[in-house]
Image 1 (cartoon, chains in turn yellow, purple):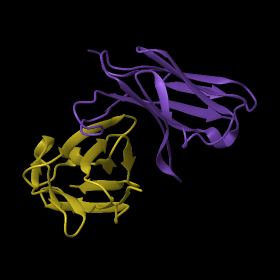
Image 2 (cartoon, chains in turn cyan, blue; image 1 turned 135 degrees about the vertical axis):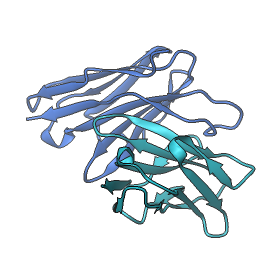
Image 3 (tube, chains in turn green, orange; image 1 turned 30 degrees about the vertical axis):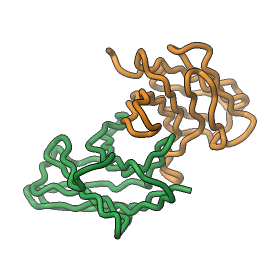
Image 4 (cartoon, chains in turn purple, yellow; image 1 turned 90 degrees about the vertical axis):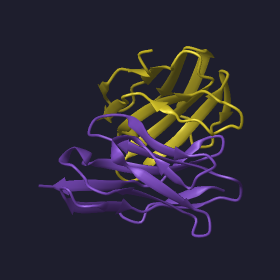
Length: 110
Length: 117
């Protein structure tokens, strides 16, 4: 069965600092991996996805993620965060259906 | 397209009452998903449909929950009778399969915040 582990429940960071949100997956088949963002009282919005090809994936709002098959990881990074990046971030693995991790709350402080 | 539309946005009901949540997927999408989000359990997949047919309902918590998709543009999630522990945000999402299943993003609605008192 597929599963996703997000190691950090909350990540506080100062504005303009870099950030990495960690995600590890478990799957017995080829995977599709996604990062979604959820702003308060909103639905989930796709940040980026890995389907195949280049292991470095660029998404919206300056985020990027790197697929590492040997470490079964798909960590999300941003070189310089803004206050507006404060939100909940979900890593997900997909076969026929999306299975989400428990989420990481990114808290950007001024 | 207006995106995935859910109604109502908020629902407050008394324990024992029937609750019906509604979802209109994006036109042309062939997969529809119902998720539940709580602080304790995170995002849980309840059920999903492909071409209006329920494919996997293993996430439906118990018989009090039921979901239907009578046509490609409408789905309902019903809880009867409702209990306080059903309080959560319920999301509907839809996607369009291109090639191998799962390789396209799911588009989420704004959710329905259900409170059972």
